[in-house]
Image (cartoon, rainbow over all chains, first blue to last red; front, side, top):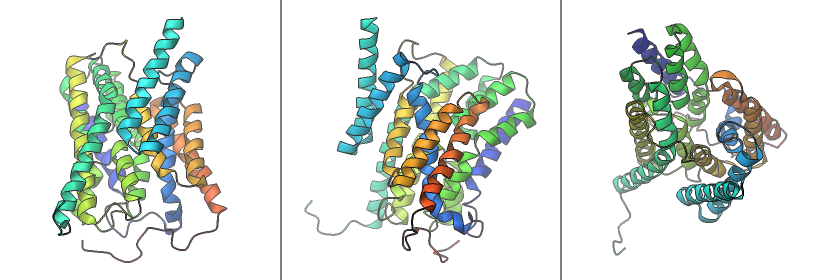
Amino acid sequence: MLDALAIALSGLVTYVTRAIFLVSRRLRPPRRSARYLPLVGPAVLGAIALPGIVAPTGEISLAETLPALVAAVVAALLWRWTRQLVIGLGAGLAVWWGVLALIWALG
Amino acid sequence: MTDPAPPSDRDLGRAAALAGLRDGGLVVLGYIPFGLASGAAMAQTDVSPAVSIASGPVVFAGAAQLVAVQLLGSGAGVALVVLTVLVVNARHLLYSASLAPHLAGWTRGQRLAGAFLLADPTYALAIARFERPGGGGGRGEQLGYYFGASITCYLGWSALVAGGVLLGGLIPDWVPLELAVPLTFLLLLLPLVKDRAGLTAAVVGGLVALAAHPLPFGLGLLVGAAAGLVAGGLVLARQPEEPDADPAPTGEAADA
């Protein structure tokens, strides 16, 4: 019962963080910050993406990091070329599996 | 192709909703391993399966759900769990502030409904589209894309967590899939990096988050994002301000 209450309240506080600047046009981020808001996307998404790419299983090592970095570079280049998320993602995963298999085969 | 009439607002809205559905569906595919693994991890705790499954549609934020259920499983009190979720999810404040100027034409009800679905992938997809020249179309197109993408992510994520809780390790351990989610976010990040300030924010945010990765409760993400914002802001502050670069509307645009 308490567990259910905790999850319900967690949902509530999460909703508040999501809604707070969308509730009213009067409640806005400070005007001076408007110029800096476009940086939110790059900063947060960079902070989500990079640790997962450098250490996909949680540790930084040549055998873990190198294949993932190669895959990320291939995915980014293919995305630049085609502008298709699905192609970048598919090719990135394929390259990752390929390099992992190569490393595994070489022992 | 032979129809000379321009597409109506309704057609445009429907096409945008389909595009959102497609992009959201792709994101859900990338989330399959993380969603199932999160559900499986929740199933390992003493928390009841029903509560773990409910955390998907109620909280709709993967890392926070996982932390909340694991804390509950280790006997933590309600207050500690809720406070921790608040800290882990504080980044949504930034999403809310960042989207506010783009959603200024929506009614309050639309904005409040949109806020409920404003998770990481929703924000990434929406901001990439709304920051295009033209702002992702008129209000109908914006609404169509936003809700098409976010409802797909919401249903997909909730189903994955439930599947993971009920069926445990559906994907064998030897299939490596951990890269799918970070790769998806990298590809959603690329179109947002438009200048040196954006690049600085992304690189510094990523490197600091990596260095702060050992912090508990996913706090490294928050620290990295803050550092990226400050670093990008410093670069931006040294550039001369462009008078027409600000997309934020100044007047009261519409109803509500």
